[in-house]
Image 1: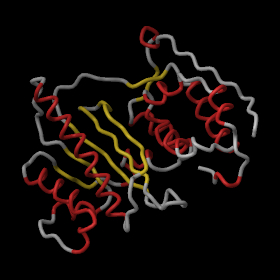
Image 2 (image 1 turned 90 degrees about the horizontal axis):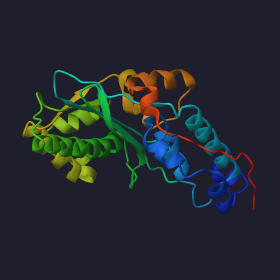
Image 3 (image 1 turned 90 degrees about the vertical axis):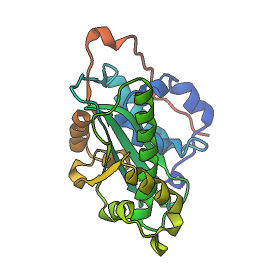
Image 4 (image 1 turned 180 degrees about the vertical axis):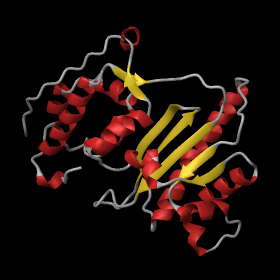
Length: 253
């Protein structure tokens, strides 16, 4: 995201008047824009002209993709899987990491998030471990919900991680100085692993879906990500009335 100090500040009224409120519903229904919405939301108190231009690009994409949505396919087995990642170098201002995760029920995406972490992490492993704790909590909650609905899982939920140090922390039963800053998260994850409620495995960065929820990327991986997130062109009967109005004129203060 562009540096807010390098551009003229845009009045809040201009942004509110010229961006249709329907964009919020569209962004929640489209995981592809999650990292961009997260980045832009950091400047909503004092948006700049550059921020406004970035917002217009997101709105134009939503306008052109209003007929797209998530697909949900039936499957023969019931299982949960989560992907997570954290970008420790994402913010040059406060050095807080951007974390993202995607949770699948079978082959279907059901939960996703792209959000700045609340605290500064002193290493990539620690920022990813905090992200691991977040996605683990979501998976455990989903498992409990499915159990109450009498849909027991056929296998232990898996969390896929591309950081070997984070996986080692999850499996190591000995606490040491490296874990004291994330001790609560460490206790929680290890407890879930020991009880057989969760399993943490390694995945290559190339196959890490959540990687794209924490970083800016070019058009090529963007189109590849659409397939991984099951974003498809919806049938006419499922599109509904999706209207997005964009006014490209903006007035500076």
